[in-house]
Length: 201
Image 1 (cartoon, rainbow, N blue to C red):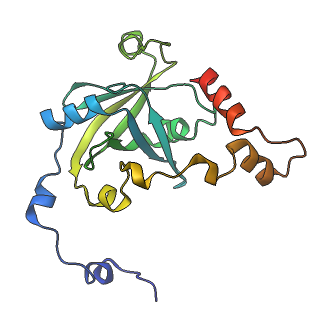
Image 2 (cartoon, rainbow, N blue to C red):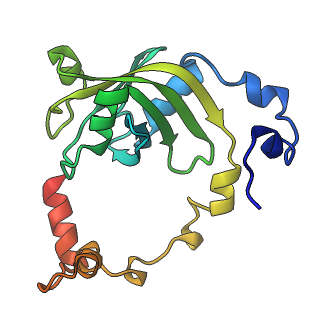
């Protein structure tokens, strides 16, 4: 049996507590901006005109995403695989959702808003790091900011050393892609993949 109505869905759950509703903000307060400043990692979600979804990991040194004011985030576009799934979605719909993580902190920060791909030289320079200036900057106008409780990361034990999995439990990415694409050439070993990653950071 599937749930096919909002009424059926809501019937399974209690109403949210008042605090859970009211803590959604229309802009970044000092706590949210500090969270962004400490975060080296964000999951960026987007949607295209057809409803095609994408969730993309983005990382850098803590504070690589800038929050120059309460309504703005600047995300440098670092080198990737050049598929441009997220960027194409943003050109088409201009919508973005962000989930910020800080290592060792079980709470997360959710931000939703509109996104523009900018070539503004001042924004690009503001997002320059020790390696390079980005080709473009994703300028996000914040519409909703929401500090999310710790329960999901606590259940996952995400930051606990005892919960970490050895990389050896999986083949290397090169070996998995070889199998997926049924390639005849051997897949890159994990050491070879690490060398490639280091050269492409």
